[in-house]
Structures are given as structure tokens and as C-alpha cells.
Length: 458
Image (cartoon, rainbow, N blue to C red; front, top):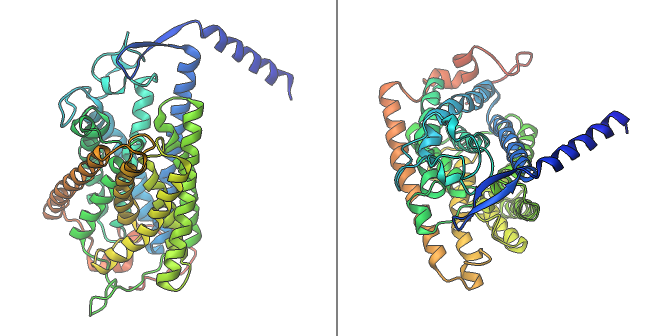
């Protein structure tokens, strides 16, 4: 190894050791002031930022999954939506979303902390304001917490784009992305993570099976219903027709990127570089994903006659969504069981919604909405200390049930209002001619594959 590199490492190690004598404050779970040395403060912050970067990279995964599962004539449109929902969501979540989610307020929403005020940047109870007291259990600076929570908010918005793909006006997508990341999602987050009423009830959702995934999934359901199915999806008798995506390898790449990103999504929600907990969370996360892929493959094999690749890929995602609520509080064995159930349910849910004439090109409603609710409820059974199967009684399960129903109701009501209002004011769906030609050319004047002859069948 280069001598300069060795010297640099030694110097940095010495600096960290010296800085360890300086202390930062942190509010413990019982409300007492805990002392955190600079070494841990730096490690916690670095871990949370790295986890945020991993979750940000999930935007690329969503873009690949959605474009791969849809037709080539809409690939540019999918990429633009994934780019712009994060870009516009960043501004909305900075301006109002983070304050609504974590700012001091009431049981329904936060009412302070707009634009993430700089006076709350320093970690610890001694120097932080009470504006973001809901985050004082973590030692990281508020800006690090904001970035980590931002990428979660962007995930909720991105989920919606998949279910509404191939027929939504681009300008309408920009409008509802702002409302989702700025208002609808943060209110759900406040209920559970910001000291709101579901938190007081005892609901547990460690990394967001319901807060993030079901919120995105149920909003996707409302959007798909208001939009209606794609042209040619159903025949004259109302039976669904398959509309193949243009690039399954691209979709598979997206799933692997998402699987990787989940190692930031779930372990990162520990909000600290705590070796044992984040290691355990990584194990439960991976086992659930693997089990979900296997059971989805088997279920599809039985029901469709073939080990369908698309269903298997969604099975891995369904397993990941299912474990997200309980990844920190279930055993590896429980995680594998929960993920396996998620893989089975996601296949059944995709087929159910298709037969109900809810056209979801990528299975987003089933992966995120259905499996998010499933994972939240299963935690009531499998939680290692409070679950029904471990002698904890039914109190946690009841809180989980109330949370699932409340978030479902909130998203259905606000989703139908939002999408119906956009439909009435600016229009929500492209014209029949634009849909047939493809949104790439009609909306963006571009093609993802200009050197190829891309058909626009159906």
C-alpha cells in the first residue's frame, strides 16, 4: 500500500481519537440527556448519509423497473418522471414537507420548521430547538436527517408513476408529485414517525411498510382508477390482455438496484452506526427478499403454468416491502416467513387487480400497497417482544390494524380528490392519439431508441 495512504489513515485515526474527548448531546428514549462523543457522532452521520445515498440510487432502480416493464415508446417519459419527481419533491419537502412531518405541531401534522431552519442544525438536546423534537432520539444533524427522509418521500411519489404509466400527462404528473411529497405523504409520516396520533396509539413501522410503501401504493391505486386502463388492455368482454414490457433485462437490473438500495432503506432507518442492529436488519431484509422471490416464482408457476420472470422480480420487491416495517424487531426465521408470504400475496394481488380492471403496468399497487399493509399487519404477529406469536397479546396487532386502515382511508380520500381535481382543471390523461403514438415523442419530442424501428402496437 502507498506510504502516503497509510500516513493519511493514521492521521485521520488520531484526529478521530482526539475528537472523541469532545461531547455532543443526545436525548435518550427515556428523555434523559445522553453524551455522545464526536467519534460516534461522525460515524452516525456518515452512516445515515451513505444510507441516504443508497436510497437515492433506488430512483435509478425504479426508473429501470418501470421503463423495462412498459413499452419502448414510453421509456423517455418514464425517465423524465423519475428525474422530475425527485427534483420537484426535493424542493417541496424542503419547503413544507419536512416541517409537516417532523415539526412541532399537533397529533395530525407539524406546524413549524418551514424550510428546515438553520438554527436546528446542531445535534443534541443542549443546542437543538424544540422544532424537530421528534428526531432528537438520533444524534445526527438535522440536515442529515432531512436528506435521509427526503429520499423516502421521493420513493413514495415514484411508486405512483409506475401504476399510472403510459397514459398520464407529464404536466399533471409534476403537479401531483409536489402534493404527494409536500403534503399527503408527510402527514402520514407525522402520524407514525413525527409524534402523531398513530405513534401514540403504539403503531410500529420501523422503515415504512405503511408510511412509505402503502402510502405510495394506495395513491397509485386511486390514480389508476381515475385514469382508467390503457388502450387495448381489455378485450370486448372485459378480459385482460397481456401488454409486454419492452426490456425485461432492464427491469431485472432495476430490481437488483432496488434490492441494493434497501440495504440503505432499512438499516439506515436505525439512524446511527450501531453495529449489531444494522447487521441484524440487513440479514432480515435480505432473507425476506430472497424468500419473496422464491415463493412468487412457485406461485406463478402453479397459477400461470410457467415460472414467470416478471412475477418473480416483483416477488423479491414484495418480500422487501413486507419486511420493511419489522426488519429491526423480528428474527431471521420470522423475516423469511414474512417475505415468503409477501411473495405469494403479490402474485395473487396482481392478478386480482388485473381482473378488477385496474391497469397497473408494473404491479406497483400490489408490491407497495398490498405488501406494505401485509407487512405492517404481520409485525403484530411476529414482533419478537410484542407479537401475538411471541406472547405479546393483541395490542400491537390492533395498533397495526388501525394504522393500516387509517392510512388506506387517508390516501384513498386525498388521492381521489387530488387526481379528480387535476383531471377537471388541467387534464390527467393524454389523448388517444398520443397514447397510441407513445408519450416519448408526443410529450418530449424524443425517442429512447432512435436507431431502431420501435413499433407502437396497441
